[in-house]
Image (tube, rainbow, N blue to C red):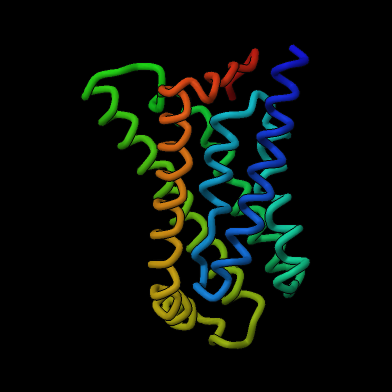
Length: 194
């Protein structure tokens, strides 16, 4: 049990450091960040839900110290929406069994990962842009203003989708390769996988 706690502690630290470095490196590409993908992976990998949530929140807190903060209401919404993918741990664990082999299982795993990643991206898009429309005076506070807000956010959404999918496939693919080559051990399921 101590070894598993040590492994998870090292993984937690490594994921946060990697996430901070990547978020700072790609800061000039709007919404192209590894945070939602890290939250998906953390939810899948860690036994503890609380430890998994520490990954995206840790990345955001540390990287925002370098990049800069913004309106506290918007920060709360962004942080919450980037931690939300941890809640997708149950479907990921059901559909993404990296220990199974075969084309059917592989296609199911890819479809499950894509669905979870897209769901997280869409939730982030709709909720954060609603917050932007609600709290800022850039748009009229009407139905038309809300639609304009969403329409003008579409170019940024492309970066969100690209980043979320690229980083999710990199993380989960790297983990699968590490398992196959013996560089990593399979995650240990918690007493309750939810």
